[in-house]
Length: 305
Figure (cartoon, rainbow, N blue to C red):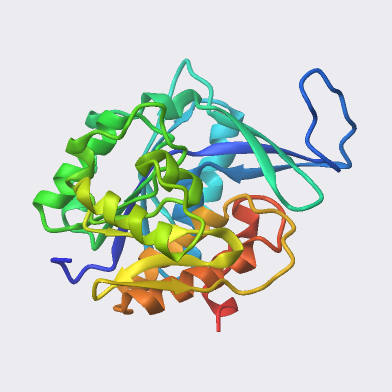
């Protein structure tokens, strides 16, 4: 990574999460009663920005919100975290993003997202933040916003020697374009996303190695596959390494992956070797699953020993 900056630019989505807890997920046509309801700040981009800020990084967020009550609350919440929101655009005539989330008794979740203003994020929005992207340590992105903006951002960062980190979630119906992947330094899918991307089901060391090799053949330099309570796989010195997760009782897995991504980026900007950075990220994600909600679950640096 070509700069001494500690700044991490996050480009992505911001949603208001409407969360209902249930004993089990409903089947088609079934009505069930939920046990409780909460509203929380969410969206993969905003979650990752909050993780960066809480875990000791300098977060700059590029996003779109609607000119509505959800947008007002979200902007205030982002600023309260110490996130640089100069490139968060308030958009008239469109709703802010919303996600409806059901969480079962095992802590697993089912999510439906109405993207709203997130779907209007454009290359022009990225260009407004070009100077910060080009002077950052890392650029962190996900796939809840349109690809043209992400491709533009990745090219800007890559051409300036800035490391590009992509969390390919939610994975799209079509394969990711080469013009994006060839500008990605680190890709962080979970096992499901890795299977969509490579056609390889990650079930053990051999399949994890094959999936990572396949992703590298697509143009990315490094790959980290998160495998839930099993931890994460990567290659170090061309050898497969699995970093175990911390064993905890999961309450809600919402934003665990986002916490991992934000934590990993912070660790890398602090100069940690990759294995140590993944270990730090696993610890942060393990804490997040013991708490309810997306951003409310993200830990602070002082909580990670």
